[in-house]
Image 1 (cartoon, rainbow, N blue to C red):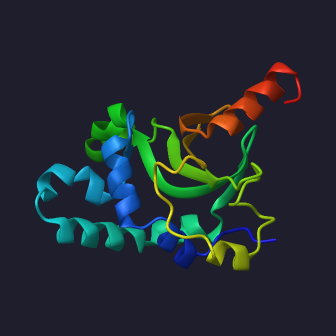
Image 2 (image 1 turned 180 degrees about the horizontal axis):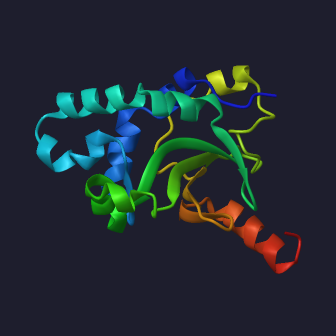
Length: 180
């Protein structure tokens, strides 16, 4: 069983265009990739914007994240870790106040794609051959779960950015029935 989905597959499924469109629609969180932090300064220079994004995706922190990029978070199950982010209100602290940076919880942008039966696609149970067949993922795909896992002192918290309706129904039905 894989502990990760290979970087080449993650980059193919989630290219720059995915993050670029997502970051324009993401409310409450900021991706900590310099391409999106410097978005306003890069306006009009799409090539430089994409180049900066790809350089950042190839750094040591991203390599480390991709080595074990599947995480189990209840009640959601397996989630694919995509990138580091922070609450938008904390961006100034993260960028300019080194001494207060550690007070912000580590936040990871995560995704899960569900198949037609509602089974998770990004899972330790899925083979690499299956992953190879997944095309580029669109941020507004109706089968895509997007969230942010914030690691607090007590336990991880999940902010749901978007969730497929049928998965939301299953999740809340299980909580209401006391199955979680």
